[in-house]
Amino acid sequence: MSEFSVVGMNTEHALLPSRLDVVIKGSGPALLLAHGAGGGVHGNFGHALDDLARDHTLIGPHYPGAGGSAVATEPLELDELADQLVASALAAGQESFAVLGESLGSAVAVRIAARHPERVTALVLTAGFPVADPVLGLVAQLVKALAGAGQWSELARLACLSCLSPTDLASIAPADLEAMVAQTRTGMPPGTVDHFDLVSRVDVRADLGNLSAPTLVVAPTGDRMVLPESSYRLAAGIPGAKLIELPGAAHVLNEADRTTWLRHVRAFLGTLPTASA
Image (cartoon, rainbow, N blue to C red):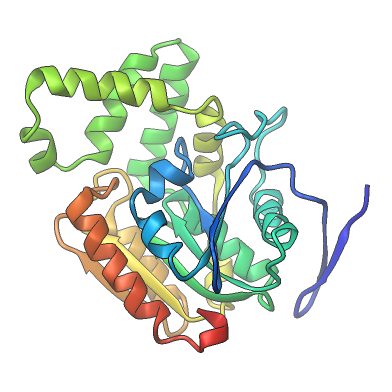
């Protein structure tokens, strides 16, 4: 099997061709998308995909066990996952790119920038974390325990409780809430447990101080799964990072909060050199 030879600042990493299912959309400067645990490209980035694709080339790889990517046969490793995303971008003809990471995808984005700094033009990290705090660690344990017991509907209820704001939940009629739980259950990819296993092991704290790419950190302040303090730690640890708060926003952004997020992301990308946006 052939390899891409990639020379970093201090080390050389060999990239095997990507094995991931990839969504490619739009034209213009490249944006590499790193989705969250138990999610996917369309589910995580929603209507922003169509907007960003108007003037960017979006490369959205699905992690093992999500989208059309095969389920992993071994525990996921952050370095390998980061390299697979980079290989997906190279296979799409993109030698350099900004990386948009959400939740677990923020840690993936940080590791991409640490391992391949010459390729990363900017980072956007939303609802991210450098290491799982006790709240996120407990969520990861519950995900694995409920899935292991075959209690997928209960896992879907946990997801709705953790990922939506109290205001959003209170606005949903009981019958509609049950339908949302069922839809959430149906939408959970086969790799969900593998993704949350990786969540429980991620630690990119040592990478933060060495990053050089312009970085925007977006903190949904109403997030009950990845507490906003985790975003604050990312912003404090990355040299020159800009922090934006989304007041009251939950882990899964509703339409209004996603629209606000998109406005901030576009403003940030607009500050970059044209070739790097």
